Amino acid sequence: MAEKKKNRYGVWIVVILILLGLAGFGTGGLSGSIRNIGTVGEKDVSVADYQRTLNTQIRALSAQFGAPISFQQAQAFGIDRAALQQIILTRTLDNEAAQLGISAGDENVFARLRQIPQFQGAGGSFNRESYRFVLEQEGQSEVEFENTLREEMARTLLQGAVVGGVPAAEAYAEALVQYIGEQRSVTWATVDAEALTSPVPGATESDQQAYYDANPEAFTLPEARNITYVWLTPNMIQDQMTVSDVEIEQLYNDRIAEFVQPERRLVERLVYFDAAQAEAAREKLEAGEVTFEDLVEERGLGLSDIDLGDVDQASLGDAGDAVFAANPGDVVGPFNSGLGPALFRMNAILSSQETTLEEATPALREELAADAAREVINDSTDQIIDLLAGGATMEDLAERTDMELGTISWTADMAEGIAAYEGFRQAAATVEEGTFAELNDLADRGVFALRLDSITPPTLQPLDDVREAVKDAWQVQARQDAVMAKTAEIADGIELLTGFETVGLEPVIEPNLTRRSFVEGTPPDFNDQIFEMSVGEVRVLDAENRAIIVRLDDIAPPDPTSETTIAQREQLAQNAAAGIAQDIFDAYATSLQERTDVNINQTTVNAVNAQFQ
Image: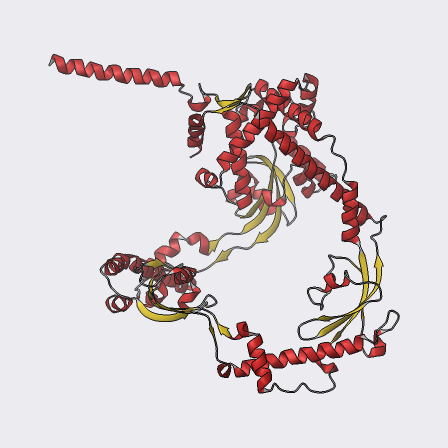
């Protein structure tokens, strides 16, 4: 008995030691005793900075996809690694700025604080209470935020020092502007088979043989994979399913919101930090100083960011009565919302809609029958898999199950029947002769299995089998050759000052074309051709079933005084300078990282990541 008591006390001692150890580790989790994930040079890399960077990256990815992204999905895109690299680069620059003695003074920091909208009161001046409240919501102290701001300003100074000497790429921009903005003025006309003075004779046997020999790809059948398959889809057995009226009524009631919809509104909601800001915005709007779109832009948002879609009155809370009493285009508020005080714009009225049980019954019956058919197929898969494992052939499966047997000489361009399913096409393209047959899924939750019986390689069809197609193709080509020859004769009579009308053509005059211009009715290489021509030159272009005569009338440089040219030159110069500056800074940052000691505790990083899951 004494031995048992001794063992029991020993267990309690171990438990107490474990609890004390956990308490020493920090009951506040990673935000308690563990504050950093590592160091870069002499700078700590805080858990909070890594968390904020990771959150920002995940939100950006969610915005890109238009839907919330889970942490596991973000990890699949490497977002956690990108966030870690970003914070390491930031701290590398912070460390270098500190080593060089670059810093921002208190006056500059406070001046920057006054510019941040979230810290401003109703009059636009710095509000210390707003400042404290925002930082409290973010889990930061004033000292931490101001140090972060000071380091950010120092990084900006460092980056400016690195790339500040990059000259404007004026010569580069000018050359591009001259190339892009150079203009061509042309006259062109169309010539077709109506211009021919005699019919094109039919193809002789020697003509047919020559065309057939010169164009074998046009008469070659693609590779065909000869496949035997079995399949079963919900649609095949849906009519056999029994659906009761009780089930239909139950589904109708479960989804009553789909069939009985109250009156709704299309609404946009613009949220503000506090009621004073929202009220000030409403006053500016009522005074006509700004539009609603201006207010949205002031918040750094787009209309898509504030769109609530179609909503009912109850979902709008305090704003419901006012929004539903408003006319389309009216802005009401501010009213409290789940995100703070907000202005609401009502854009359209959606009338109430009701679909009766009787009206909904056919669609609901079909839906329930399809669900039942899918369930039957799902229940039968184990039996089918067992039969395949036992060596059953496609023919056996068709005989012993509800699956239907079929054969197909499959090619990549087929898209009918079972070949309309992507799952089947992928399997048909990769299956090999003699491989073990597997049960595969179809997009509509049907199933199939297949067997490759043989492969027919690409086959040139005998001339006698495709003679009519050869005749038709030869005739088309011969007619186009005749049109091109006739057009060349006409073009010989066109000179620089000659009117196209003198040779019986109706001209089209196209002035001031650039390389980006599109001229309807011309072949794809029209622009390439005219920018190769000299003034007065006439060319004949092949336009498939007709021909184009084009004459270059004038070449003009871009107008150096036009707003478009000036804007293009400035934009190109800025883009080029920015690109060069970015390349220089990237090279500098890479060199800096190579000579800066980086120590990251991967265990701590993993623990932070675990909190996101």
